[in-house]
Amino acid sequence: MYHFVKGKTTHQAHVGLPNGTFEDEHGREGFFGPVSHLYRTHRPTDWIRIEGPLKPRAFDCNKVAAGTKGKNPVDDRRSVLYNEDVVLHVARTTTPMDFYFRNADGDEVYFVHEGQGKIETDYGPLSYKRGDYIVIPRGTTYRVIPKAAVNFFLIIESRGLITQPERGLLGQHALYDPAIIETPAPEPVETEGREWEVRIKRLNEMTSVYYPFSPMDVIGWKGNLTVWKISIHDIRPVMSHRAHLPPSVHTTFLGENFVICSFVPRPFESEPDAERVPFYHRNIDYDEVLFYHDGDFFSRHGIDAGMITFHPQGIHHGPHPKARENVKNKTETDEVAVMLDARRPLMMTPEAHDAEWKEYYMSWQPTRSGAE
Image (cartoon, rainbow, N blue to C red; front, side, top):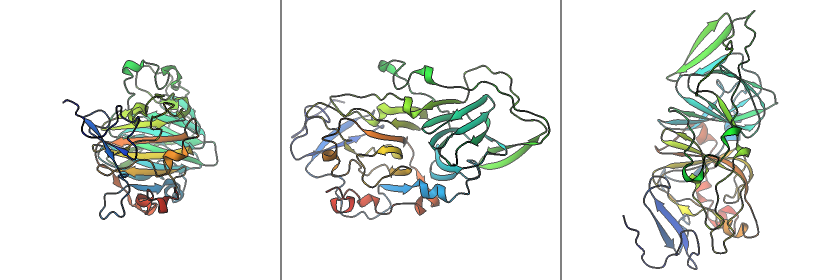
């Protein structure tokens, strides 16, 4: 379809907005489908109230995790958001798992928000530390052995296969060099002198299988399916000094009907007329979730590490009122966050409702946000 231009607009999206206007992106298919930019004289988030269930939400995963016993990331994981394709869990653990776990329902991506330790797997052990992503394919047998006093994980459970995005014109070394991916080497565990339990999850029900030897008895493996790890700190963001790019350029993993993106520090746009904060948008085909890991979350007031914001399909979101002013004298962002965009609507669990910041949807109002 042709692009049409009506009324007062910019020459280039996200650059040189007409005085007194706010850019509002109305798009389909994430940031890949048909799109138009509307130039409004008011922020589309300047509502005075919302009546009904559709509203931006935020909740504190520190509170969700604090309600667990801290035994292990299998028994004590707490779901926060879910749909038919993906479940977001948080888990806090302090002691080594005394059993092995196998998820027959889906792949898992562990993001290490706090702590360090080791994961023993069929393929061998992998150490982990703060900021690591560990991808565990469906059917892998593993256990988590923490070495720090507190380990806090964001766990994304996918019904489909977790893969890497195509780099296309950016080249194969964009986002991160494939050479930084770490995979485990076999390291058999002592098999004598005890009984070993493997708990298998299928259709969200647990079955325990017991062996007179350790299931970690692999002495070699080959193939292209394995546990693998990268650090969020090794990700090199795609950027432009002339225009603000959509969050889809930060995609780290692909799931079935969802993507996982990583936001890491990057230079701000230096073009004089370029917008330096995210544009207002209503990403109508996807629910957008952000887990805040570390740093200064410049576009959000009142959000701290370990919190999640949840912006569902159909209602606007964008930077808080004073964000544009706050970044004028900064040269780069200072935030680390994990984003999940889900094609099917996400549902909140009771644990998420209990940890919700109920007034978050009003935080765009200057008197509520403290931004002006």
